[in-house]
Amino acid sequence: MINFKYDELPDVLRMQNGEKVETVSDWEQRRRPEILSFFKNQVFGAWPENPGEVSYTTIHHDDMALDGIAVCDTVQINFKGPYGEYSFPFFMFIPKC
Image (cartoon, rainbow, N blue to C red):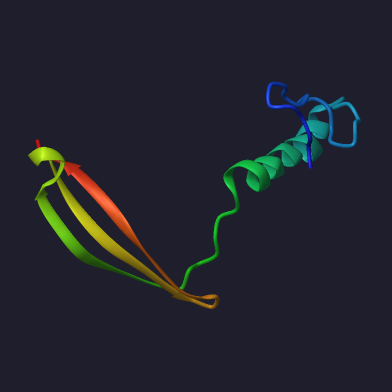
């Protein structure tokens, strides 16, 4: 893991082990993958595996959301896969034009 203070950025031309990037090949084959791995693991997270079965159910519809300037649908999203079953509400606001 790369450790640095919040107001300091790591040197993009220095490998995690301290070696300097000397060639295009060093960058393409070693340093760039290190940076992408850092962002995947520390910033964005990994793309989840296929969740299995997914279903959606509208559980509430409001034509007068936000004092009448939008429509709001509350949708229940359900996942069923190898790690169990999960569900959560999703609130979708659509402006009236």
